[in-house]
Amino acid sequence: MKAEQILIAADELLTEINKTNRPANEVINAYTRARRYIGSKDRHALTKLVWDSIKSCPTPAWLREYIPTEELNAMQTEAHTVLRANGDRKQIQQLLSEQGIESTLTKLSPLGLVLKKRTNLTTLPEYKQGLIEIQDEGSQLVALATHVQPGETVLDYCAGAGGKSLCLAQIMQNKGTIIAHDISKISLHELQKRAKRAQTSIIHTSLKPQGQFMHVVVDAPCTGSGTWRRNPDGRLKLTQNQLRTLIQKQAQILDKACHFVQDNGYLHYMTCSLIQMENQDQARAFLKRHPNFRLIHHQQWTPAKTNTDGFFLATFQKIK
Image 1 (cartoon, rainbow, N blue to C red):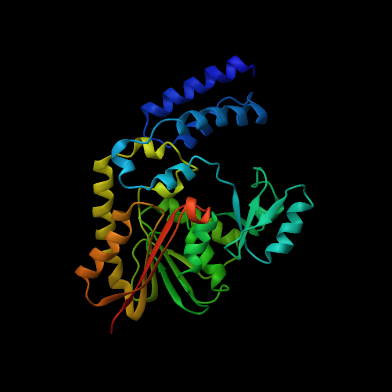
Image 2: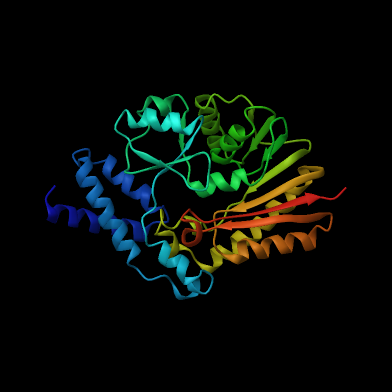
C-alpha cells in the first residue's frame, strides 16, 4: 500500500471506531481480515497510525478526576506482548529463541516472558502444545497473589475464557479442583479448549456452581481502565453512567459469590481497573455489608508503578 492509501484506510477505521461500541482492535482486525491484500508491514503501519491517533485524543475531563495523571501518561506508552510460560520458562525461552523469537524474563512474575517484538504465536508448536499463553504480567501477579495451594478447591466465579483459571491451575501444579463459572456458554467452551491445550485436568466448567470452596475468585466486570495502554479507545468511550452501572454490578456479583466461600476460606476480588470506586471503595462497601468477612490484604499493580497492566486485588477471609 502507498502512504496515501494507508492514510485513507486509517481515516476509514477511525470513522468506524467512533461510531461503534466495539473495541478498536476488533474493528481493525475485521478490517484487515476482509482485505487480505494488506501485507504485514502495511498492517503494522496502519495499526500504529490508528493507535497513535486515538492516543492523541485528550482524556475526558470527568475521567481525569478518577485516574492519576502519572497513570494516564504511562498509558501513552506501548504495552509489550507478555507470555505466561507453562513450564520452565528459561527452557521455553530457549525453544522460542531457536525459532528467532527473542524475549526477556519478566521482572516481577516468575512465570512470564516479554517478547522483544510482536509475532504470530498461534502457529508455533509451543503454543499448540500449551507451553505458552498470552497473559500480561499484572494478570499473572494477581493470580499468584491469591496464594492458592496444590490440592485446594477454587471457584473462578467470573471465569470468562479462563485466563485466571489456567494460571491458577499452573500455580496449583494441576492438583486440586477448579470450577470455572461464567454466564457465557461460548466463553466456557473456549476455556475447555484452552485447558485441553494446556494439558490441565483440574479445570471443570459450570453454568450453575454448587457447594463451597476454599477460594472463590471474582475477576469482576470493570471499566478495564488498567488495560488502556492496549485498548486506548476505552477511555474515550467510557461514560459516567457505564461506570455507575459497573459498580452496582460488581457489588451484586460479590454478594452472590461470597456465599460459595467455606468457613475460614477466602474471597479474592480483582479488577483490571485503576479507578478507586471499583477497587478500594468496593472492598470497603463489601465489608460493611458482610461483617462475617475480614480483609486480609489488598494490592494494586499499575502501568506507572510496576510497568504492567493495572490490576487490583482484595482478599477477604470468611470468619467462622
